[in-house]
Each structure stands twice: as C-alpha cells, then as structure tokens.
Image (cartoon, rainbow, N blue to C red; front, side, top):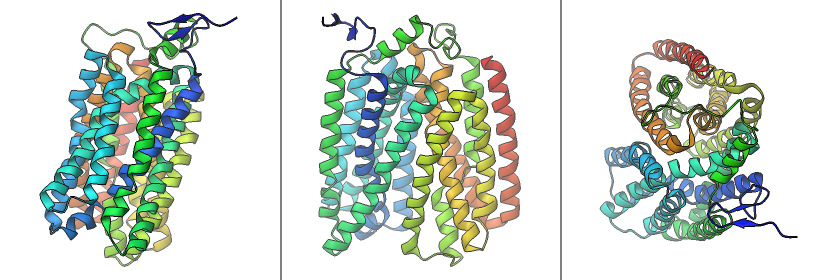
Length: 412
C-alpha cells in the first residue's frame, strides 16, 4: 500500500514531506552550502590580489570588500521580511544562489576594475538574498532533528566547502602561473552542481514547514516551541538575545586583524597565513558539531562558551609568541563555529514560524552593525594599546554573559 499524498503540503499520510526524512533534508541542504562555499570562499580567498592586479589601491580593496560584507548582512533587513511576506522561501534561496554562482566565474574575466568591484559586491548581495529564506527552510527540519545538531551539521558541511575552495583556487593559480580566469572559471562546476541539487531538493520537499507542523502536532517540541508573539511583533526574548549577540560580536576580532598582527610582528610568513586559516576552519566545523549536540541536551546555556572564547582570542592571538598566537587563531575558529551554527539555532527556538525569516534578517542586521563597530574598536585599540584592547573586549563579554542570562530568563 502506498502512502496518500497531500498536494498542498507535500505530506504523506505519515505526516512528513514526501520523499525525504528530516535528517536527509538537512544533509542535502548542507551539501548545497558545501558546494556554494566551494565557489564563493574560493573567490574571496583571492579577492584582494585580484583587485590589486586590476589597479586597485589598498583603500579601494578595503572599501569594496567592506561594502560587500555590509551588503551581505544589512540587506537581510529587507530580504527577511520579504520572505515572510511572500512565503517564497525556495524562490529567494534559489535566486540568491544563482547570483553568487554567476558572479564568481565572471569575476575571473572581468578585465576592468569597476566591473570586478561590482561583481564582488554582487556575490555578497546573493548571500543577503538567500540567507534568511535558507535558514528558515532549514529551521523547519531541525524541529525534528534537534535545532543544535541540525544547524551544526549544516555548518560543518558548509565549512568543508570553505576549506576546499581556497585550496583548489590556490592550486589552479600555481598551475596556470597566476591566471585568475581559469582559477575562478573552474568554480563554475561546483556552482552548477549546487543549483542542480537545490532545484532537485525543492522538487522533493516543496513545503519543509510540514516537518514542523507534524512535530508540533505530535507534541514532540513542546519545550522548544516558541509562544506566539503579539501580531507584528517579535518576542522580547529575541531582542534580548540580539543584544547578547551584538555585545559578543563587538568584541570578536576579525581574521584580518589577527593575520595583520601575525605578519606585522613577523610571527608568520604571509604564505603560511592561508594554511593557518584552513586549520581554523577545521576547528570551526568541529566546534559547531560539538556545541550543536550540547545545545540540544542543555539549551542556550551552552552559548556561555562564546563570550569566554571571544575574550580568550585577544588574550592569546595578540601575543608575540608564534605558538600562542596560532592557538589564539584556532580559538577564533572555535568561536566562529558557534557563531555560525548554534546562534542561528536559538533564533528558531525563540521566534514563531510566521516571523522567522524577518527575525533572521534583523539578527543579521544587528550582527552587521556590531561587526562594523567591533572592527573599528579592535583595530583602533590595537594601535593604541593591546592591554587596553584586552580589557575592553573582556568587559564587552561580561556584558554579553549578563544579556544571555536575561535571555534565558525571558525565554522561560
């Protein structure tokens, strides 16, 4: 006997979207992200040298890459509410991936500086378009798999692509004598594969929200299902949580500042910086898996590790001892893994389904503003006094712990 099928929800009689179990959906969606990260992290690893080869100054490189990162975060303030309003989560996710997959290979053959700058920013806009919709689609399946574990597995696969992409581009540049066209052109292959897999996934699971509807109806998520907020409003606990994230992000040093210290203090040759970055990405993936599992067992208290690691980064990484500074970079990788996985899982636990993409967009906007402020703060204090920098970052992380405690109280 075959299961009956509801064409509206894509559910079988067993109550799950036809053709795929929740864990399979998470893994396949993670594979899409792996392939996409292969593409855009491969390109981002050489953005600076590529723009310089077209005549860009350090100022131009800084402005363009900074504008790209700002676009990737701040534009989610628009794409998040748009996803909730239109309910076209799959359409926005696919459109965002298309923009990235098309922009990267064209970057290798741009030929003129202005066109390359436009493509660098366009790739980041693609991330802004897709991310709230993608995270919302993923959040439905993680209702069943466990929020922490589901987002953690997705992040681990994502970071696998972030590790492979730069290494492939480096190998192509070495093989072609520094020719960017074939080095970035080869990234079209995983890009096309990512789009094909995404379209296939949509055909198999047209309505991922069915995962969550079934789980809630069965009472499987009673402890984690957020209470409905008043119409048009997000829960108070979400805003407290966003403040926690802003405080910890303000003290989070960027890899650019860490690598600047390593090279300027002659602790590491520039050629070895990408190797250390790759090691940090491996730690990122492991930390995401570990904290995701712990989150599902113990809840948001696990996030208390993030402010501790954030403060530890500046204590270790800004020393003048190679081994200790390198350890600081690996701690930075662990903190990044928590930031990219478990932080997103908690948003899904705090916000009801109908407002979730909006929440992800607002969360990213707050992160973008805090990241910009933190970058200026840490960069400025680095030039003044490293002990003062450490003291200020530690103070921001103490504040973050207080806000996390308030979030837990509000959630209860």
